[in-house]
Length: 254
Image (cartoon, rainbow, N blue to C red; front, side):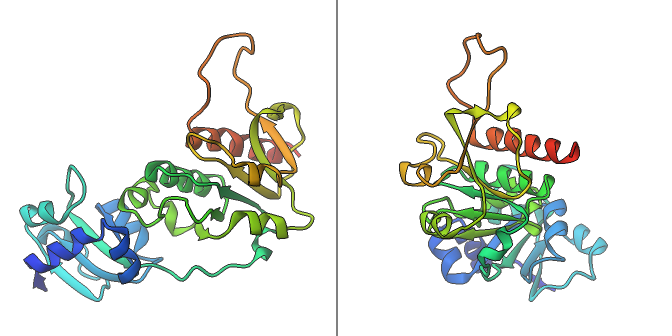
């Protein structure tokens, strides 16, 4: 078991930069629960942990294993409150085809910018049994440390793809495309199919005009009661939760 060197600490902290993540093809996860959830699903390049953690997890496999003091982990960590263990995992290849949209429900994100929102949406997709998320090329990096932490392990089961959304949606046939708009139909009064693509928009601008033109089913999340003055909009992650819950509720009653 090697010690956690100053150079290795510097390298771990460099993973906060998108350029480094892209070049090295790795991502960072921190904490016993998250690291434990990801170990069976991703190839582990490095684990740095306290001696206490290693005593209970000696069988864990990784290319490199390092024992670290709490102070060393604190210097390497990107969290405000460092934990017993952190790990670098290899990014999986982004392999997919449009066939994964047939007969199932998937999400598409049109330029979502906040890493916490993306991570929460991945966690929601995991909860509601949605296995694929298609992100526009300008959507925040899924391997941002903040995103990975916010997934709470959901990244192990939800595949995230980056693509030209306009091109993808335009190529679909017999696949309903849903999106939320202020002028859409009341979501709770519409029969929702249990396959298709649900598009969620940017935090400030919503769904772009180019993508809006390709939406086949415009939905609206009504506030309650309708006549009451309320906030202008919902956070994109919260809106995603409301929409996905209604799709799955209707599925349970069919």
